[in-house]
Length: 476
Image (cartoon, rainbow, N blue to C red):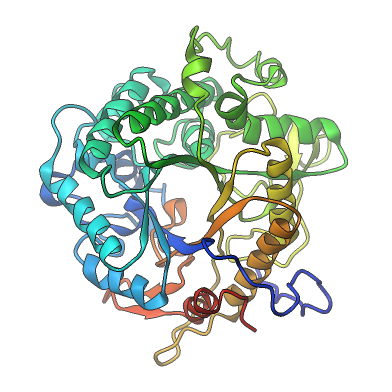
C-alpha cells in the first residue's frame, strides 16, 4: 500500500504547543518480544515454541522467514544494552521465552535460560534502566500446544507454575511484571483466524483460548503477589478503537476485541452481550465456578497497546464484504459470532502495515479507559509504526516515524491534561525485528538492523526519542 506523507501540523492540529513538559517519574522507554529478537533458537537447551513450528511451515510467513536468528540479541546482549543506555532509555519492556525456562512447558527449570534473563536484568539495572518483564508474548512451548495449547485448561496451570519459577529467580530484581501481552492476538489470531501460531481456524477454539488466557493471567497475578509482594503487576491489552455509525456493529466488535478481557479481568465477569453474541459458536462450558474470582485480580496499572483505529458496520449481505480489520487474512475469522460485521477501509495517511495514522484515537482511548476505570493507572506499553526505511551513510532519516511518534506522544500528553493517570510511554520497537506473519518485511524499530551483518544503526527516530527523554519536552 502506498504510504501517504503526513500533513503539516497547521492542517492537522494534533501536535502539542511548544513547551509542554512531561512530569518527573513519567517513564520513557522501548519494548521488544523474545521470539522477535533473540534468535539462538536451539541454544543452551531452549525448546521449540509454536512460532518455531509455525514459521517453519511453508506459506505461513512472508518470504519464508523465521525467528531462528532474528536480531541475534541472545548473543549480542551487551551491545544492545549499551545502545539502550546511549538513547537514555528509562525503562525497557522485554518478554521471557517460556521454552527457554521450561523447554517442554513443564517440569524442571533450564538454568541456562534463567541465566540469560538474569544477565539481561542485571545489565539493565547497571545502566539505570527499569526492567519491565512480560511473562508471555505469544511463544507457547510446542509441547503444550501438542496437548491442546490454550484450548486446554491445563495450560493455564502450567503457566502459573512457569510464573512461579521465573519470579522466584528474578523477583528480587524485577520491579514490574506483566502477565500477558495482547491475549486477544493469542486467542483470536492464533485459534480463530489462523494468521498467528498455532494457525487454528475455529471460533469455539478461539473463545476457549481466550478464557484460559484470562485464567492464566489471574493465576499468574496470584503467584507474583505471593513471591514478589513489592513488585508492580500489570497486563498488556491491544485495544481496538472501534468507530462507525452502526451502533450494533460497534458494540459487537468492542465486546470481542476489548471487553472479552477487561470484563473478566477488571469487572469480574464476561459481558452478557458477548455471551449472547457467541451462543451459536460455543456453550461457554469451559468457564467453571470460581473462575471469575481467580481472573479478577487487582492490578497496579494497565498496559495499553495502540496503533490505529477500526471502522465497522453490519454487512448488507449483498455488496462485496470489506475486511480491512488490519489483520492478515489466513482463511479463518478472528470475530466468532460476528462474521457479518464488515471492516471498512479508512482514510490515510497509512503506515507500511496499511494501518491508518490516527493520534486522536490514542487520546480517545486513554480518556475512555480512565473514565471507565478511574482508579487504575495506565501505561502505553506499545506504540509505533513500520515504514520503508533506508540507510543513508551512517543515518536512517525516518522522518515519517519521527512525525508519527511526535503526534502520538502529543496525544498522550493531551490525555494527561484531561486528567488521565498515565505513567509512561514505551516505543515499539527498540529494534527492527521478525514481524510475525510478515517476517522481516516490516520495520518498526528505532534502531535499524541489517539482517545479513547484524549491524545496528540508530535511526533519526531513536535520536529524537533520546532528545525527548533528555529534555522532558517534545523536540521540534
